[in-house]
Amino acid sequence: TERTLVLIKPDGVERRYVGDILGRVERKGLDLVALKLLTVDREVAEKHYAEHAERPFFPDLIEFITSGPLVAAVLEGPRSIEAFRQIAGGTDPVAKATPGTIRADLALDGQKNLVHGSDSPESAAREIALWFPELG
Ligand code: ATP
Image (cartoon, rainbow, N blue to C red; front, side, top):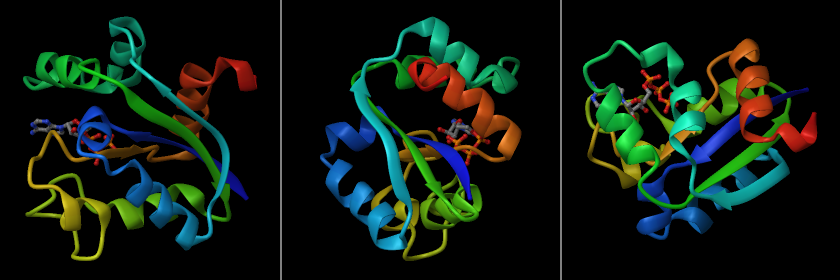
């Protein structure tokens, strides 16, 4: 079993998809081990997306992710990292996400794509420590 860090980004909260998205997580069979609603500050947002610091969309991405309340969660289950990325769909909701996924079904925009999920065990460990220091 493994853990993954999931965000329901501010667009997901604003569009009232928290229940829908958490429902999909539950129906997939992943366990919720931690869950909170918060507005993230710049410092944590920049650490979270540090690997994108040099990308042209970085300032916009930080603006977006700090723009309002989001949901942060830790999920647990066998292959939870890959399992959540499967139900999320590819980054671009139109060009990459497969129908039936969160992004393909509910999003259009390449930035406001509703969710984040850790992409490796190393990222998951780093991101869980960043978003849930209280679990450490
Ligand atoms: P996430 O890390 O949020 O799960 P991802 O792993 O599918 O998404 P990354 O390539 O790591 O995608 O990009 C991180 C996030 O940055 C994307 O989810 C999206 O919100 C934003 N992003 C990525 N590429 C672009 C782009 N070309 N223009 C605007 N925003 C982008």
